[in-house]
Image 1: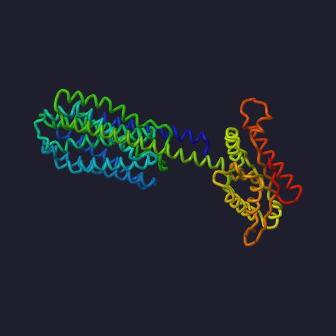
Image 2: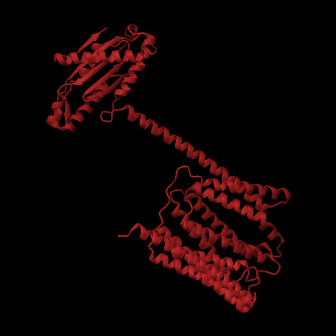
Image 3: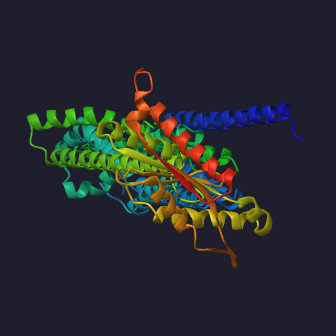
Length: 517
């Protein structure tokens, strides 16, 4: 059996191997920089060395990702995401080989080259991989709200990039806007992927994979942005600068992460209470809006105007959805409150109101009667020989008998009156009709139970001891000290009188009787 110390050493050794791989990556970057300085930037050997190194980094990342897909048996969404990322790396490496040939032959001076085909496939595959990962990793969070948060965050970042740098660079470039569509696509799709990574990290919390992805896409976005700067510059892009080393670093980080990714599939992050990931989008939105307003104050910029309108529409839609969520939550809470109220006041076996609710209803009737002077009728019904039914036919038959008695008692009183299960085989009835007499109530209840019950194919003749009282609640209250609320004491006295009358009937073993007052 593996011990805690063995696991600790394994964790430390894994961390050491990860650090060693990152050190190798840093050493390779430093060695390439030194060799390029010796060969001379722009020389054919330097172009071949650096271009081949970039392609090799992409192919290494693609190979490690492909191995992880085949050998580590991740979850379906993780396998799909890794496969798309591997395809992206294979595409970029292929495009880089094409670019190296064009660069060496002096054919890579324009805004677009033959290598842009694989490079575009890389960018779109990268975004597809991010969508697959985000959908699987944050399945519990992902929805219209999370999508709108991502759109708001991406639009805000694009606003900052456009106002802070891209707008003036495009305006100053001698190239036509149509010639810049492809070079502009790379940093824009990098921005989309960066938004996905930020949404995933803010919703699910920082993980090693998330941090490595964030580092890789940051390096990639820097490289593509610098490449666009080179394209926009009068002399065009020159190989050998910081973008090339950033590309190698980006694919190197992807390769290291694929090499050290755990074999077990990553579980979807559960929803957490009080998640504040949405705050990030709004924190970025405010300075982005400020940049856009300042830009429009000085010049007419249709891109900024479109971005501002998009941000406003996204915020309004997000708030509408939030209000709708709150409305549905309140509706659910009210429905659950009503369900809890039913559970608290209804007997689950018979469906009648329970003892607590009957006491509350009696208190309400007493309170009203104290004001009007009307009398209140309370009756108790206790089934005779109910234990014999349980013993001979079983408890299920006894439950059926209780349900049958409850149904008949409910049908024998008005809707404004109350029939309740007091407990066990005992029931209680409240009649608020001021014209009702106790003996009439007893006869009505007895008549309801006269018809035999058919329980599980057996005819059962039920009988009950019924005691009822008709009380003048003002008279009951007059004999009590005025110490505040008289209702609880009057209710207690009323219920005690009805219960006592029922036990008198039960002990006498005679027909139900009523007591009139």
